[in-house]
Image 1 (cartoon, rainbow, N blue to C red):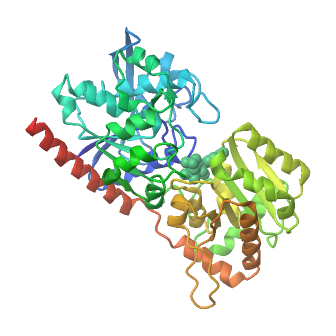
Image 2: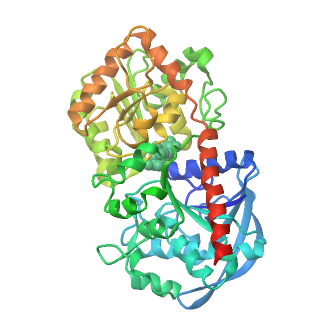
Image 3: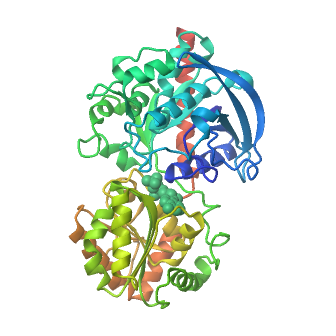
Length: 494
Ligand code: ADP
């Protein structure tokens, strides 16, 4: 079974959010399960060629783009700590400059540079099989960036039989990011007419919709989100498209890389610990308080948040409760980048309550781990959350998540129940997207924090969960097998 992952992010080589974590972890598990899995990403300027030992394996591969012969080179390395080959498409003009995305908010809308970058990338990927002499059974496409690829695959397969044998699986990591562009612009790039079914109500081509309607199977990253996106509330305007394909839509819960996210040997944290010596976690808390310039006192509950500062993440709810929360004898540390209004709101709160709140506006993988290890409670009051990894990582580090019951958060966190004898819970969960609900839940968590026995039990419950990729990787393999059989059958019968 030969699978090619195609995506815009890959941990640790090019990461912004959870998409990178998935692309950096799931293939490792698939490989161990016997799948010949490989990954293709753009060779962005930020890719550290020396660190990851990139090697040029082909050059001058041609594609037609804007009616011109463009040539790109192909580089390769192995995904760190694995045998998974990673291919990098190298083209200075369209892929090489800047970071991963041009738009700070990661909202692709209206940035033609973003459209050129990812259309060029998707088109190029389809030309690497011949030079590699390796043709995948399934191209596994992730999110809007490569949403155009299944359509391109279909149009190529009309001319070349070899493409006909390849199936496309499309995974939605976030339905909100879609990529709308003028169809004539994309048509010009590709020298192809864009069929109506790729077009949105606003008359533009919608990359995500194109992925949904042209792929052979669709999945999203948690069972609950797979149901939610069929509704108007969560469907981001594509609920009707998804309804039509609901028999070919599945929710497969993400895992985390339990080798990287392991408090026992994580080199990014100061004091390693495990479920057996959980008391050492406290030293990480005191250290985190020190680097945050907050009062060092293990009795003061410490909240943490690591994430993209986007509307989705519930930062507005947090802003609304800041005055009351800081009255509750607790501390808060935030790490994130994103929309200016949220960055400014957090900076404002830090200025107002410097003894209680510390804000880091940056991307910092080491500090993120220090927060997961050092905090008592991890905040994820998301408006929506396709899966969410922060809650899983925090549980693995004995930090109790406080989340809203949405998407994968609902699938992965068990809410606290008052029961003296049989505490199964792993976190605190609230239902309604409302700041009063959040505040109430924070107060509840602070109350339980005082009971060291219950708290320890909840930490142990969280740390004992199995968030590895094993189970979900096997579900993906079933999907690949089904697609391989279906595609072989349709190629034979056509
Ligand atoms: P999303 O995919 O919506 O961004 P997830 O919870 O699925 O959210 O995954 C976020 C991932 O990105 C986690 O691994 C988190 O630790 C990491 N992350 C997000 N923001 C930062 C940041 N500013 N610095 C370091 N890591 C970050």
